[in-house]
Image 1 (spheres, each protein chain N blue to C red):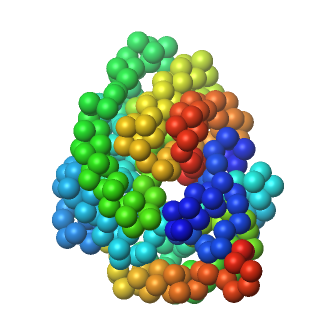
Image 2 (image 1 turned 90 degrees about the horizontal axis):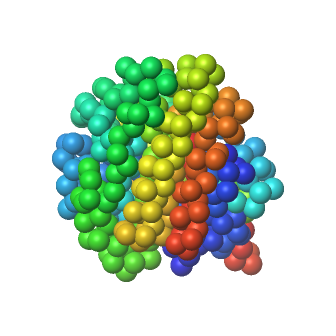
Length: 101
Length: 236
């Protein structure tokens, strides 16, 4: 999939972000993922902000990383939980330093 | 900078802030407080839904439509609408044929005048300039070859892969053409900045089958997207 010829891939919530990131880095393509929508938004067994922070802390070291969902939002969700994660992401996504990740 | 960061990141580059692109599904219907059936079939609601999600969640790119059954419905599959998500398909028009008969019963290839395409194109026109003003990328999501082959053939597809590989290859080649037509409409007619091929059922294939059936049949889509100067993404 990574070597299919696409500029980037999106992968689901079952995959390890860091592992996928190592592979996409080798192929110099982007990667989108992989907020745990099932646990954080559908089943509400995981804290959405904590899972966003997992994505951010693992993704920030990967060139080409794009924060995204590990599956489509195809069920009714508690919008406040999703908003909490996205607002916290927007506040934290710019890294201090020289302006590059 | 949001759109530029997103596109540069999708090409594998370092960018100054992590971009954000949601696999939004049918969530906009919930925000709009309308049924999924209505949301997916009305251009104004698709456009309003995309803008609502952008404004609410601050994303750098937004799918115009995130419905993996859209192509299949224009090929003769019957939908069963659900309250929360995209419709389920309750009939596969090629499921009853012997493998060697498949090539004679492939539906005519769709174009931008068929099925839901006029609605989606109209939604794209409504939303594109609004997104440009917000510096947000418009994303088209086309169904991938395995998704389309599976929707047309149903479960017998997985038997065909190893018992009738030539018939399966013909079906995947056809499905790849449908996928590429969708990619062309998103890239060239609607003018999406990013075109994704969503092929979740392909993850059920063992690697050898993925290489044999899926990889060659996504290439036409990448060629079309890249020739149009757009950014490609493979979702599974």
